[in-house]
Length: 121
Ligand SMILES: C[S@@+](CC[C@H](N)C(=O)[O-])C[C@H]1O[C@@H](n2cnc3c(N)ncnc32)[C@H](O)[C@@H]1O
Image 1 (tube, rainbow, N blue to C red):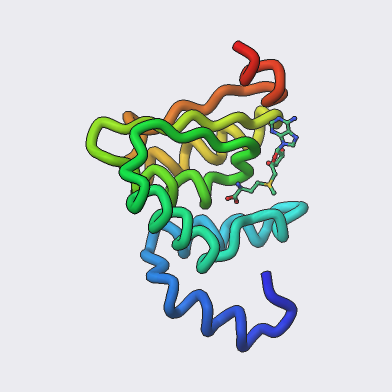
Image 2 (image 1 turned 135 degrees about the vertical axis):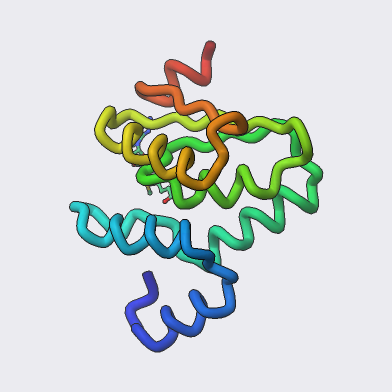
């Protein structure tokens, strides 16, 4: 998050944050290490980049509560798939719930465990 709350509000307002993302951000604020969440404008850029690349395959290393994953998955080409790597079982479960709520269950797989081991596979 930017340190300046006004700047943060401004960036979020123009990032096109919908109800699902707003709820994920709100609930994430209650967690330890809440500052790890992707900023709304950064995550909006992920959607634009994924869409611009017409990406069919994407990988996210470190998913936290799923904010960035939702934004990447929304930009995927039809039939595309995102694989997420998350080391924390608790966070992976939260991210899965958030992805389900976003209607992205079929487009995203969360692999639990250290990313380097799973990436090697
Ligand atoms: C900065 S947060 C990711 C933010 C997230 N991409 C988002 O959009 O909100 C980093 C995440 O990486 C996870 N992590 C740390 N080390 C990891 C590892 N070796 N393999 C997989 N995940 C890891 C942490 O548990 C944490 O959830």
